[in-house]
Image 1 (cartoon, one colour):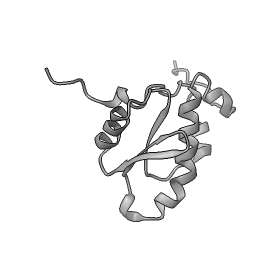
Image 2 (image 1 turned 90 degrees about the vertical axis):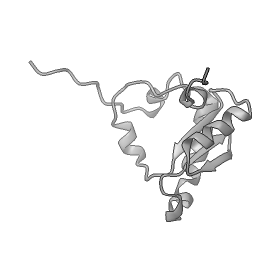
Image 3 (image 1 turned 60 degrees about the vertical axis):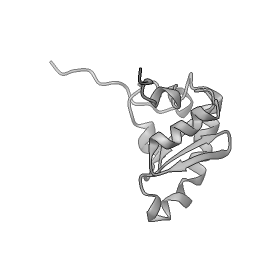
Image 4 (image 1 turned 30 degrees about the horizontal axis):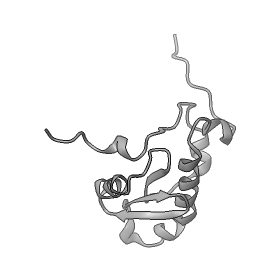
Length: 114
């Protein structure tokens, strides 16, 4: 018997249902800047963090970027961390209906050493 597959998401609003407005706004800023960042091969696979419309961190290391979010005391609901790689918005809509991650800053940091 074949396993059932998750239905395809056709509606972008449904895909982001439950995602904090701050994350969505920061994500839009990231996607707005992405073409310019992709134009420079030096930034391939670098990581950028956005808070609202502003890029607040940019580095080759994801850890550095996330640490800057934490240093600034940003809420998990107010920032977006993305990697500089080609992006296809249509492909994202075709993914499963699994809800997007809601905690993007602090959740990626390792637990403190004891």
